[in-house]
Length: 102
Image 1: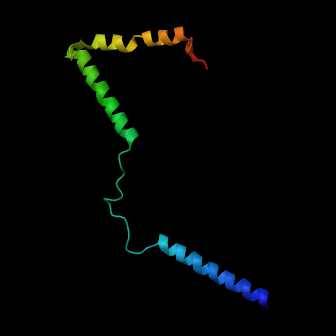
Image 2 (image 1 turned 60 degrees about the horizontal axis):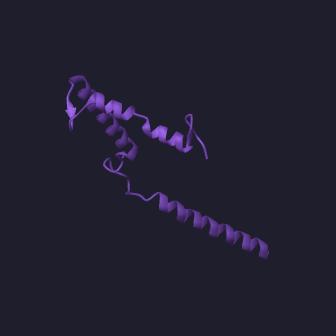
Image 3 (image 1 turned 90 degrees about the vertical axis):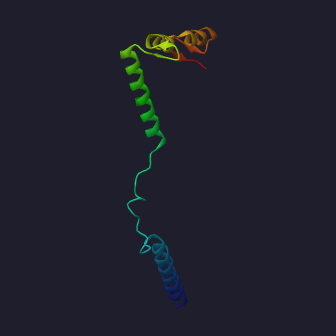
């Protein structure tokens, strides 16, 4: 008899515990409003938007032949494509024909 009593009381305590846990998830009257459900802008979306805006500004600069701080679009492209940093890494033995060595 004792074993059955302890099993039943354990089952009853477990049912009570589970029902208490379920209550914490299903609070009535605490539904999210439409304002709370709006997705937030993530950092990656902001970075992507900044990259697209920067590229659009560069294309506009390139097509109009304008300058930014005295630099033309062609000079900016040349500075970006300049690989003197790559050559320094190859000479230092950090890079080997495009592969990173340890």
